[in-house]
Each structure stands twice: as C-alpha cells, then as structure tokens.
Length: 351
Ligand code: PMP
Image (cartoon, rainbow, N blue to C red; front, side):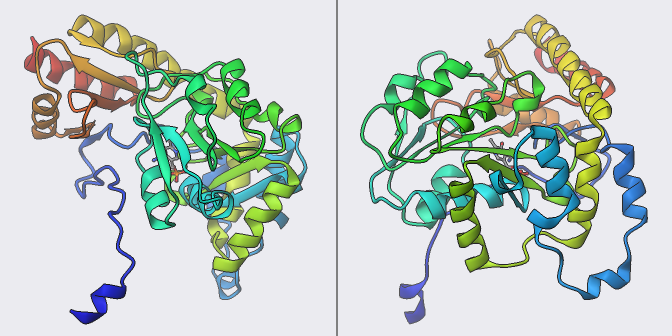
C-alpha cells in the first residue's frame, strides 16, 4: 500500500508473557511475589471516583514526589516521575541522546535500549561484555553521544562497584550517562550520591520490582535540576498528564513504609541465596546476581528445552533465542513456596 512508505517502522520490544491463567507460577518478568505495602491497599480504598472527572495532578506537586524526595534526601527539582521506568527511559533517550554520535550500551543488556534508539533514530554501538558477562568500563572511553547501562545489569544480575560506575561517568562529562537502577534495591549500592558531583548523571529507578507495584506503572529519575528540567520540557511536549490519579495517590505509601520495603527485599535476597545453592546442586551455573532473578545455564540440558518443560508444568521463566544468551534462562525469584515448586520440576527435568 502506498501509505506504508511513510510509516515509521520499528521492531517493537517483546515483553515477557502475561498468561491469562492466574494459576501459573510466574517467574518470567521480575515482578515481586509479595503484595505492596499495606498502606497501598488502604489508600486505594480511599480513592474518590468523582475526582476522576478531573485531570490528574502534576506528579512533581504530589505526595508521591514529597515522599520520594524525603526518602532520598533530594529536592523535588532533582526528581522526575513517569509511567514506569520504561516511560522515563524512553523520554530520556528522546531528550538527551541528540548529538548524532552513537550512544553506547552493553551488547547483553535490557533489550528495550536498542528499540528506543531505533524508534528515535539515535545511532548506537553495543559494547561486548567480557567472557564472564561483565561490563568493561574502559569500553566507554571513546567519543560517543551518551551512555546507558543497568546496574545491576539485566539479565545477568551482575553489579558494578560504585568506583566502576564513577569511572564511566567521569570519562563522559560531555554527554549524559544514564544508570538504570531497576534492580538496585536487592543488594546493590545506588550511585545517586554521585549526582551531587556529576551534572551529567541521570539515575533511573522503578516501583515495579522492589516496591511490588508493576501494575501501577511508576518510575522515576534523579539528577541535576537542569537535567530534570530538560526531561520535563520533553515530557510536557508529548503528554501533560501521564500519571493517573490512582498511581499518584497510592505511590507515596509504598515509599513511606520503609520497614515493610526492607523486609520484602530481605526476603527476596534470602530466597535468592538459597536458589543459588539449589540451582547449583541441580547442575546450573550463573553469574553472581544482585537482582531479583538468576541468569542460569545448565551443564547438559539446553535452556530452551528446560523452558519448554517448565512451561508445560505451568512454570514460566524467561528465555531469549539470541546470540550469546540462547543457552540461559532468567529465573525471577518468587516466594519460597514457588521456588520449591520450581526445584521439584527441575529435579525431574535435570535429575
Ligand atoms: N530497566 C530494566 C533493566 C528492566 O529490566 C525493566 C523491567 N522490564 C525496566 C527498566 C522497566 O521497568 P518498569 O517500566 O516497569 O519500571
């Protein structure tokens, strides 16, 4: 058809499956197996349908912004809130990667980065992880149009030290460096304090993993007020009202309940450490993970085969048929009960 010549064509990101059957054990999208903080349900019950007549508040003027600013000890002008970190990252690509020079990111990483780069016509260059799947900071010293990487990296779970992160930020003062900390709360150390020293550093986090709110779509970025200002200019040029009323009302509760948050993250980390032992005993190897997932490969059975057999047993994990990682499974850490069910089936498959 003639009009197709003028269509912006993209190969979209493929998210993990969201099966309609609620009874499956879902270890495929790094969701949190525990409910959000009790205050979230309480505050949901107080939502007022009549308020939905109105456009929602601007995120920066809400209790959610106040709670985040308090929690991190930053000003509201150092904070940008969006519809999950995917929204924040997408806007950041659009805002900061405009030089025409290639943006650098790892070859094995969150597979949305190249999709956004393609969508916005941003050139990019993937830097190969080393043989142990580690990011090599020295690869990010060439001239470029910006840098982005997750820490810990996805889907490997490997954490870089603050020194290594600073090394990359310091070597790239003329471009924006985005550190995607979607999984930082499961044992990592955030590089947020570096934003005081480096005005080119944007730190992005999410409510989807450690705060059990993937369904509400809340993400945020922290950085120098100037960076945040530019991000807001682009956001308000696309859609003034991105965050819905419900998300803005309840989000603050998930931030304020620090005790519950720490307890949940603690439980997941404990289960993860147990999982390392169990999976190791079953013949899996994996890098040391600091995420709420483990990126595992079996010594003799192909990942795709294990993936298929797990699915036949109603256990969903993530598999990518992609070069270098096509013999790995990313297994999200669930509750102890869910993990026991996983080990039972794996013992049959791998035993
Ligand atoms: N960054 C990384 C590394 C992720 O794995 C994810 C989850 N798919 C996201 C960002 C986006 O998460 P969300 O949009 O739910 O905040």
